[in-house]
Amino acid sequence: MKTTKFTLDTNCVIYGVTGTHYKAELDRLVALAKAGDIELWLTAGFQDDQDRASAAYVAANQAWLEKRPILGLTTGPFRFDYSMLDGRDGFVSDATAAADEAIKGIVFPSHAQMPDASNDKQGTRWRQRMTDVQHLTSHFAHGHDVFVTSDRDILDRKARLYAEAGITVADLPKRYRSPRARRNCTPGGSHAAIC
Image (cartoon, rainbow, N blue to C red; front, side, top):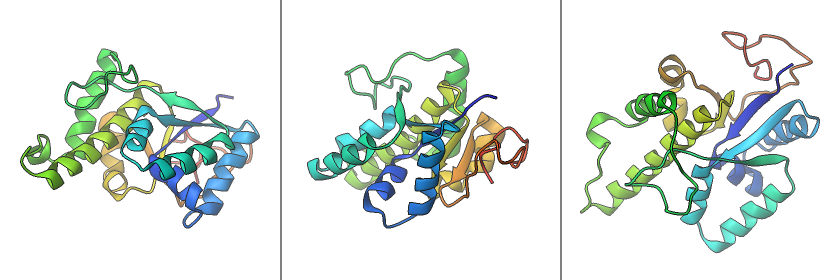
């Protein structure tokens, strides 16, 4: 049986660190990963989020991650207007580039795809949305199965992300069970770990 690969959004790590929301759900995902039933991954977009966080938050996130079975960071597409020159992002396949265009069209309204450089708030919002695109495209590029988040901007678009880019998005509060314990519980039946 193929192991289901879950990609965690940055907010999953933040909730894991704070323990204020979704603790039971995160603990369940970690337990499934420790048992070898699923794999847990982050994207290079997580590191982009950390680059903008305070040193205290970065240290707390790192301490939490070191005790969890996170397999690593997936890379995303290099973007001249977004990526750092540190090698986190790189070239992607034609299929990933096409998925990236679809994801951008879903996550960004067309009028918001280019930020107004004179507006710091708009530029910050653009960067946050581009990080969402980076998370999702990286998830796609590495063939992972489920993107887990509590981000309403992504969750409100999960039907389109599935229909247009083939990305399954799961709400963090979902219940997760071992694939051995159940079969075909999502529409399409391909991700038996999601209830």
